[in-house]
Image (cartoon, rainbow over all chains, first blue to last red; front, side, top):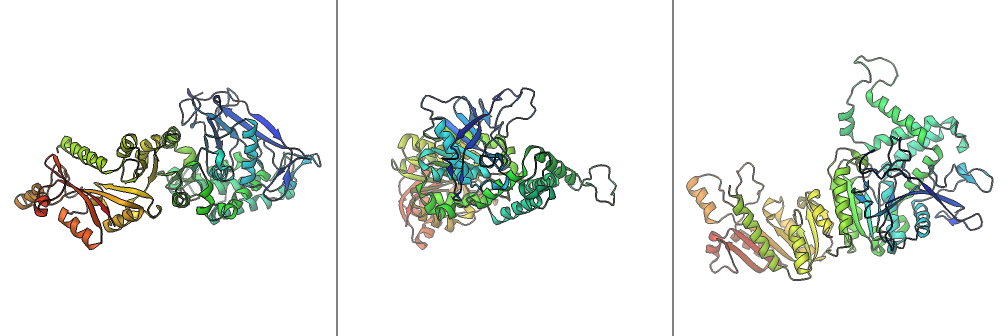
Length: 379
Length: 206
C-alpha cells in the first residue's frame, strides 16, 4: 500500500424515510425507505466545519479512497487525491463520499428491494435526477450533523452534483469545485448515452429490466461501456496508445476476431465493467445525466446562479470533447456576470475527459491552493 | 544579458503600479503571472484582486492566497467579464505582446473604470543608437531579445501611445516615466521623455 494511503476503510449505510414518509422526487414520484452507502476519511473538527463532500461520476461509487481489504489491489477512484498530505488532505478535512441513489453499490437503486412487492424494483424504480441524488446526500449531511460543507467537489457527473448543491442548498456550500463538467449534458453526450442504453435494452437478456443478477444483459452493458469509454478518451491518446497496432502478430486475419489492439482493449473494458456494474443502474444514471439542465430547473444561467453563495472553482481539460472547456466557461461567464467569486483553470492535457482522474499532479496543486484560499478574503 | 537589471526594472514598475492603485479597489491584473503583484496589493492595500494569465498553473499561487483567478488568452478577448466590474484593470508589460492592442485596451476600459498600462518605450535612445549606429534590430537591458525570439510583436513609443489615446478618445489620467533609475511624474518635453524613458506607465480612462 502506498505511504500516504488512507488505508483500510469500511463503508457505512445510512437509512432514512419509509414507505409512509418517503422522499419526494423531482418527477413527482416518491421513494422510501432510502439507503445511502458512504465512506468518510479523516476526522471532523469540533464544529464539523471541515467537511468536504466528493461526488462520483457515472460509474464511480462511494469508495473514493483507501482499500476495503489490505490485500486489495484496487484503491478508491480518487485515491491519489484523498489522503494525508494529498489534495483533499485528511489531516485537515473530513472527506465524505457517498454512492448516488439509482446506483448499484449499496445506495437504493433499481436492484434494491421494493417494499411494496419484496422483489427488486427493476423498472418500477422511479427515474431519479441529479437533484434527487443531491437531496439524498443532504439527508446524509444532516445525519452527520454537518451544518455547512466546506467544499463540494466532483468531476463529470460529480460536477453536476456540485452545481446542483450550490443552487439547491446555496447557504450550505462554502466552496465548490466543478471539474470537467457542464451546466447541462450536451446533445452529443445524450446521443452517446442513447446508444449505450439501446445496447442494453436491445439485449434479449435485459427482459424489460426483470433479469436476475446471474443472467443479466452483460453483452449490452459491455457495449454501452465500450461506447462510453471511447468518449472518455481523446483521439490523440488512442492513436498514441494503440495506433493501428494488431493485438498479436502483424498479419491481417481477414476475419472478424478482435484484431486491432484498440478492439481488444475496448472488449476488455466492456467485459470487466459488467462484473462491477448493473445494467439497470446504467440506464437510470445515464438518464439522470441526460435530464440535467440547470436552465430548465433554475432558469437562464445568469439568474440561476444569482442565488449561489459558494466560492467556485472550475477546472476543464483541453482535450476533453465530452465536456469541453467551452461548457465550463459558459458557467464561469454567468457567475462573473452576476459578480460571484469564481476561478477557472483549463489544464492542458492529452487524456480527454478521463484526464480528471489521470492528471492528478496538476489537479492536486490547483485543489490544494483553492482549498487553502477559500477563507482568505482577497477577492 | 543583464538579468539583474531587468529584474530591477520589473521590480520598479511594479512598485510604481503599487502606488497608483488606491486602497480597497477592485483590481483585475491581465497577464498576472504568479499573482505576486495582486497578492502584495491584497496584503498591503486591502484590494480585492482577480488575476488572469495564459499559464494556468502559475495562477495556483493566487488561488492559495484567496484570489479569484482565470486562465485566459488576451488575444481571445475578455468577453467573459461584464462591464464596469473592476475599479482598475492592470496591463503591465503585456501590451507589446498582444495581437490586437486596440481590442485589449477597449476591453480593459469596458471592464474597468481605469486602466493601468505599462510598456517598454521602443524609442528610448539606447535602442535608437543600436539601430542607427549598429544597424541591427535594437536590444537593451529591458529588451534583451533577438529579432527572431522576441515576444514583443508590437513596437511602440511613448509618442505612439499618446497618439493612440487621442485617436481613440482615451484620457490619460496619470503618467509615470522611468528614466535612468528614477520615476518622473510628467513629461516636460514630450520629445525628450520619448527619448529618455525606458518604461512608460499610464492610468487611463474613457
